[in-house]
Length: 371
Ligand SMILES: *Cc1c(COP(=O)(O)O)cnc(C)c1O
Image (cartoon, rainbow, N blue to C red; front, top):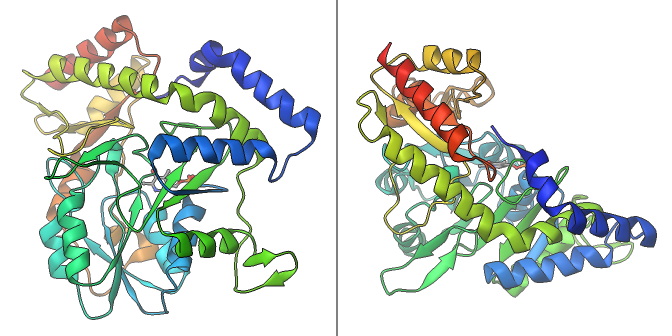
């Protein structure tokens, strides 16, 4: 699915030098590399504050803690997403309220969000699934109307650009009150272990979330609130700082591969290519087909036999996960998400795909869909 070894070969010198610098300085925790990377990521994203943390799940948890939500407050998330989005809501004693997604973009459906709002709703967590922003203009307007916070799960969408009706553009993660991202190795900006970051333009929220990530501490050994321990370590920061200047090229490489896939599958009746969110660029964390005229699992197995990895993200929506079963929801309540879970198939997507590989993949997908 990804080829991190080949990518490393191209940036080995910068990465190795950064790692060596950290080891030689022994500033492993909260070293200058972390601050340098933070500043560079602020410049890249346009976020006023970047708060580096231990991983993307922590970023989401700290964001919700920063909002000071109370037990029982409702937080709206899409039911078709990675589990972390709802996990942190549940862990904090908040109530996850799930909504359906759009068949084309696979992102949160705004009308479903509107219907899910109650007097207890406090926040919405849109997920920019597979690398394109949800309909943020409509979502921000809805949040404003109901005085709700918006925490973007931008773990899959770093670098995606959203264009508002007035022509303003903002990056994924910098549109809502808070944005969260992950530097898990296979993410579009990945480190060589775990990492994550929080974005906000709000000074008070930034101060609070920075303290929460550091045991609720602003002055050493004085704890103003209950916090957690979540840090981006200096070696990971050095790796990310070496990779960040390449991020736009990495995005372009993914978009080139996606364009190849789109063209190859345009006439394949068994498949639907990923629909596009009209106001967002797509950074293709995943290239996800909908397999309609063939047996998805048979296609996947056939590909595996021919040495082509393909994955199902995600086979079970949140409301059908055992840990999140809720008497309010039953099978069939979120028909789009359930239909997607049954038909999605993500193909290899990374920065090192060449035309020969793309041809081999697409030829085989099309052949298996004809069977
Ligand atoms: C990867 C991911 C996360 C979690 O990130 P980690 O760094 O693995 O904790 C959360 N949400 C989404 C949508 C993700 O893709």
